[in-house]
Image 1 (cartoon, rainbow, N blue to C red):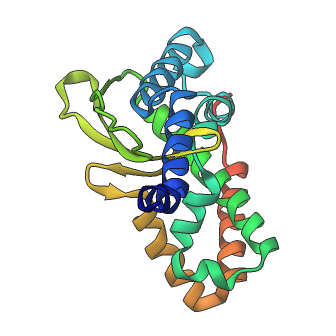
Image 2 (tube, rainbow, N blue to C red):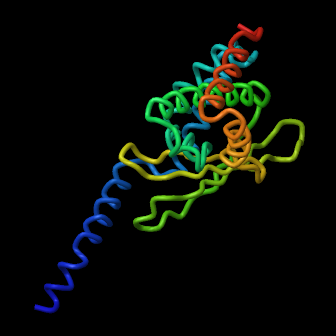
Image 3 (cartoon, rainbow, N blue to C red):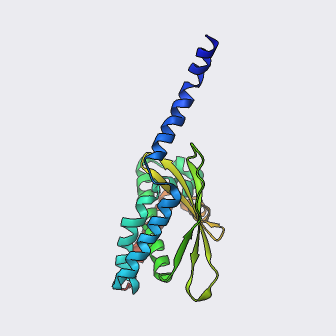
Amino acid sequence: MKTMRTLSRWSPLIGVMLSAAAMAADYPPPDVVVKTTSEEVLRLVADDKDLRNGSASKLVDLIETKVVPHFDMPRVTRLAVGKYWNDATPEQHKVLVDEFRTLLVRSYAAAYSAYRLVKVEVTPLQLAAGENDVTVKTRILLPGGAPPVGVDYAMRLGSEGWKVYNVTVDGASLVTTYRNDFSAQIQTGGIDGLIKNLKERNAKALAAPAKK
């Protein structure tokens, strides 16, 4: 009877662990996700003349279709907004996620435009059984003998596979950087002030002259 009671007590936890293990087995490992995505994006850039020449519109489309699906944008946005997230309404949450997504897409596209002739080294990850939150480490090898850039992807396993929720470039965290920026804006103009600023930044980027 004691054994049965013990098993009964632990059964929910065992169920969760088995469920997580089964879910992990259904999706590519996080380091493989980063490696295959990076290689595909760089290959597409190399094969397309407009992308090689830095076409802003094509780069944005490329990031939207090949990179963004691997990001957990609601989580990234919530972490960037920080403690003020709970002060926002569901409607504001949606607008924040949409506008922040647009901002990051254009920032990512600009980064690819500046560093097109690169190689990416992904450090193989030893994934422990049941582990669902990891950091995938990579190095961006720049042309001309420039020092490599370390880029780490914090990833979490969810119902749609492994998703990125933070990126750290040479020790600088994307989430922390934006959280400091957003906090200052919210303290001045509230959540609506942050939304207004994001919309203005995105509109300005959209209106800027771009390579076709």
